[in-house]
Image (tube, rainbow, N blue to C red; front, top):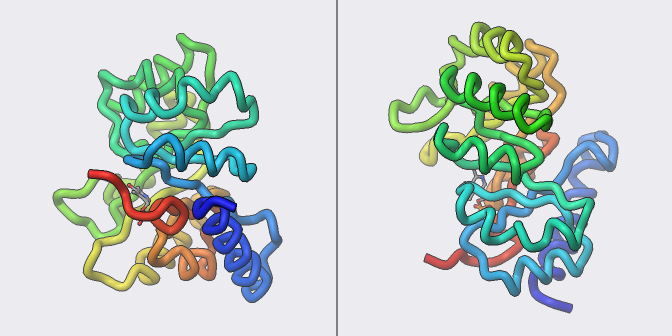
Length: 221
Ligand SMILES: *Cc1c(COP(=O)(O)O)cnc(C)c1O
C-alpha cells in the first residue's frame, strides 16, 4: 500500500472515531485532500485508493494537476481553497466544482457573470476573516450579513462558510465563531480545520476538513 493510501486510511479511521465521539453522522464530514505543490505520483496514489475530493489553492497549478484526470474520473470533485483573482475566474469556473474562497463583491460579480455564461452553478463558500487580520483574505465578520445578501442578489449559490484561523491563536475559538455564524445564517456547510487541527474542527461542527500534509506528506517548494 502507498504511503498516501495508508495516510488516507488512518485519517478516515480517526475521523470516524471523532464523529462517533461527538455523535455526528458518519457522512457529515468530508475530507478535502489538499494536493497543492504535491507531485503527480502522490495524486495518482490518492485516486487509486479511491479518494475523489481534492483542494487546490492556485488556478493555474490546479489546471496542470487535474485537467487530465477529469475524463478518467467523472466523480472527481475539486474545491478552490485559495484566493481567486478576477482574471482567473473563467478558468476557475471551468475547472472547479466548488469555490470556497468567495471574499469580495468584485469577485462575486465576476463569478456570477461567468457562471451564467458557462451555464455552471458552482456552490460557493464565503471565506470569513474570523481574526480580523488586516493581511488576510476574507469578509470581516461584521460585514458578513450584507455580503451574503449581496451574493444572493447576484444569484450565487452560497452553501457555507470557510475560515483559516490566525496562526498564533487557539483555532478552536475561531472554529466556534465560524460555526455560530453559519448557524445564524442557516448555512449548512462549514469548511475549517487543516492537518494540525482538523479533529478540533470536527468536534465543533466542520462539514469539510482540508488536509494536505497529513495525507500527502511535506509539500515541494
Ligand atoms: C494548504 C492549505 C491547507 C492544507 O494545509 P495542511 O496543513 O497541509 O493540512 C488547508 N487549507 C488551505 C486554505 C490551504 O491553503
